[in-house]
Each structure stands twice: as C-alpha cells, then as structure tokens.
Length: 116
Image 1 (cartoon, rainbow, N blue to C red):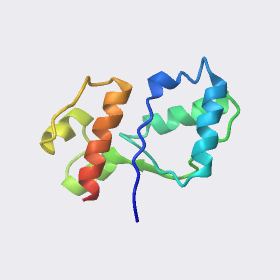
Image 2 (image 1 turned 30 degrees about the vertical axis):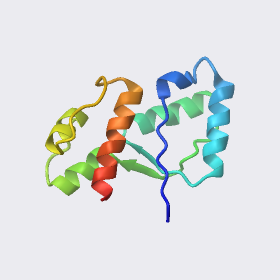
Image 3 (image 1 turned 90 degrees about the vertical axis):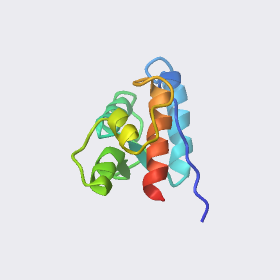
Image 4 (image 1 turned 90 degrees about the horizontal axis):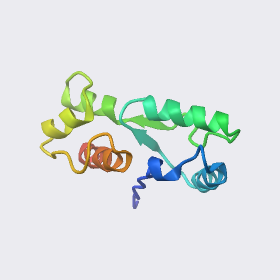
C-alpha cells in the first residue's frame, strides 16, 4: 500500500484571519483517511481549539500520533525535544527551529525513520 505524507504549513494557513480557508482544508482532510501526527500534544490541542473557535468539525477524531512519545518508546528514553531527537537520530536540524514548516518537515523526517 502506498503512503503519502502531507506536511501542512500552519503559519501560511492563517486560520484566524481566513476561516473559509480553514473550512476548505478541513473538508479536504475529512474526505481522506488522514492521520494527524505532531511532536507532542500541543498542536493537537491547538487545532481542536481552533476548530471550536471557528465552529468546524475537528477532522481527525481520536486519530493522532504523538511522534514525541513514539520516539521515546522506540529509543527507550524519556520524551525530549525535537532538536535533541534529531541529534540522537543523527538527522540534524534542517531549517529554523520553531518555524512551523521547518518543524513539520523535521518531525516528518523523524517519523519516516521511526516507521522503517
């Protein structure tokens, strides 16, 4: 089965200023089987709050993969920051730390390695 990885640039989305764009993104996600993965639970909770604010259905239900916890489980270590995980995995940071799109790409790189 082929797998596709989608990285969404949350900063560019600007859901607060463009709720119609948020609804469009959520409609697209709702039509496909999507797993929401993030480094920790912060992004999941924020997206749930944004959906509630804009009165749109949260599209992922209970489907969320906490990559931070998966990394800790697979590496038999305590949960750590993304930068430290990248160093441990010998992947190195690409881009600017704490910039949404760069962080999403780095988390994706970690996840791909963990799924091998």
